[in-house]
Image 1 (cartoon, helix red, strand yellow):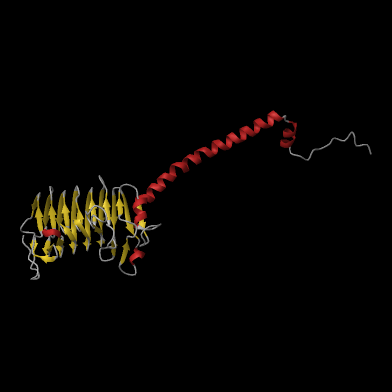
Image 2: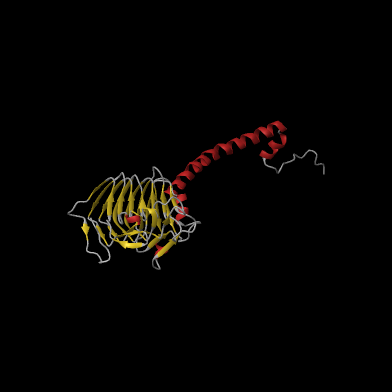
Length: 301
């Protein structure tokens, strides 16, 4: 049978026929248009993801949660102070203290607060941050505003052999509000519990068993102390055992001052004033409580 006169029917789609009939330049043009179309679709999506990622990161760094009681590494308070955004908040996972009180012991120097931050602890009886009798606990940097609550600051040390001898528990160069907390068993040449500060507001805070010139606080700024207590602090070199204000001002109200003494040479404790000032101290008599104390102390107001 002569098949030369029978029309041949192609089984390939017309698209491929057209591609086969195209020259090289035409095929390149089609490819370029296809890639351009893909880029036009992908660009808005990429821009959206690019804008979304910093927003998500900002949201995360505004609320940082401490999950471990170690001094350093992911989930630690030290790392949280690095990760938190300025103006952010640091809290503590409930599981951290679910088994009872926890102490974060500092083995890598003091904790630096270099950003505006709020630190909300679970309670002073549940969480302590300890300098381990070899480090200061908190250094709050210049022009920084911090708000700390619900924890105990303890066992901080800063004498000249360590650093500059200021603030065993807290060295304050900025503004600090300390609430519902305890500052206990810290020691430094100046201000065993804390020293200096532009503005220092204390609400429901206990300073106890601290040692230094101004055993509890050495104040060089504007101090307000409300509903708080200074108990069992010791002043070095015969200086004030509770609070010493130098070139600053202090207003103290509804505050208990008791069982404070001073150390002079090898004699400790001995009689001495719990509060002294080279600046201005205002003590509303209706609210300042000077309690009876053991006989081996003599508090002179």
